[in-house]
Length: 78
Image (cartoon, rainbow, N blue to C red; front, side):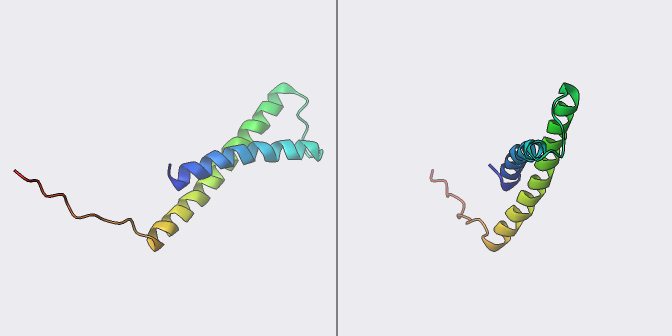
């Protein structure tokens, strides 16, 4: 898995957790079904995008500092 997909997956979970935390702290109300689903979906998408960007940037930085090892091409023997 790439750093981008790892970040996106974690971001989706954290986005939902932040919405639930906001509900516990009385910033949003999740008592109605449709607005609750909207808040959860918006939190999941926003968290996924934000953390995917962070993962992408960290993955690029890691690859710049640690280039992948290249092996010489395999010689074919007749």
